[in-house]
Image 1 (cartoon, one colour):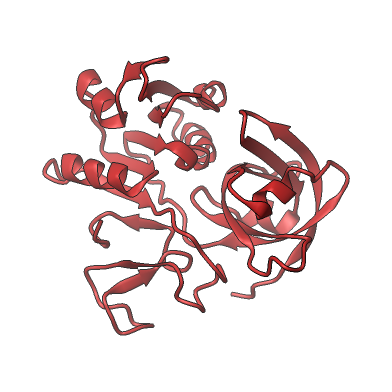
Image 2 (cartoon, helix red, strand yellow; image 1 turned 30 degrees about the vertical axis):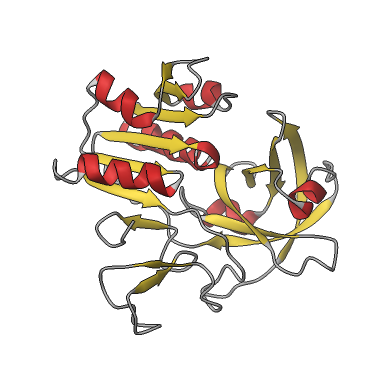
Length: 258
């Protein structure tokens, strides 16, 4: 695959919570080839910030050739992105990595924190391809976001740590209290959440596809900065790991050690 940076036109920039934003941009290549679970890398205009920032694709509009991603302000790079305005251009590369595999099974989507946005395009495509709404369980610390958008394509259940909305607790509390069952589970969020889901659904022999969140450098598998432990020996490194940006970010939960 040829990796190429592209100067893309920003079509919108929306602040959706106190520190979370959504950017949309136009790209024929990324809109027509992107899949749920894949990501893009965005380059800063400030030349002192050499490494691009990776963001999972949250929405794709093939008719408008538009792609969206959601980001949280955590440092200088993402702070710079908040200054970008519609009509301006930014440097992006993508789509990158391997996404979710859709096979028409009864699906449960689970997201926590910044892992929630990538479930939006997934929920949309599941509804479009199967005609059925999946169930989506999302967990927040307190402030919620994207629940209205997710509700367009799936039945949404919310967990908050402080109990301000939905169930007080975490996503597994919702799953247990609601008695949720599925043939396949798609998940993205913190490692403790993914580990808990694997421990819950593993004994039930339910397929679990997980999207791993990790700091990245090159985003194309060359630098080995974003490896995770794997059960099998990786043919590239000859050790028990996989590159999250290349073989992932989506894995079958049985492939990796959490």
